[in-house]
Image 1 (tube, rainbow, N blue to C red):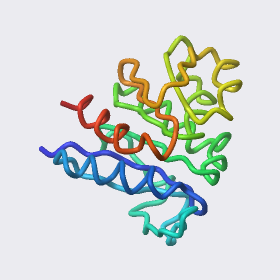
Image 2 (cartoon, rainbow, N blue to C red):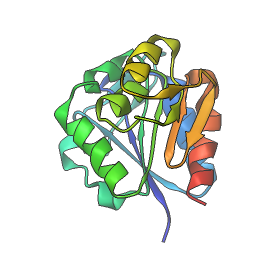
Image 3 (tube, helix red, strand yellow):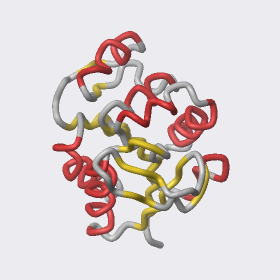
Image 4 (cartoon, rainbow, N blue to C red):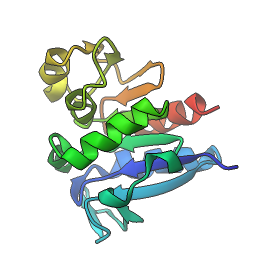
Length: 169
């Protein structure tokens, strides 16, 4: 059975490279990818790209995926305190899935309570929130701590995708 990753993007202002490059790397590794957002309406990237989500957040069943990934860009802040997004992150972690986030999105994982005592990275703007939630902030381009994979932004998107693929074997 083919491994599947769920990529969660904001409906507006997701970061194009973080979504498209991560998705490409996962698919190159033979994984299936499904995209979710707040709705299934076409989502707009910060750099002009668009993506049509396969499902809305409320339809997500984490048991259908091997990895759950939150894509950054300034639009992803809508999920920082979104109960559905935080619940998806918690359920994926509790089920032993690979859970990842890039750019500012690691704050979603921090706010869901998943990063206490974990080595993580993010876009620099999120460092204080991650530390406040008990994370060990590295500031690196990519940080892997067990099943938690985080990256700092667009320039690390391909490495992020490859790290998720490696984590899934």
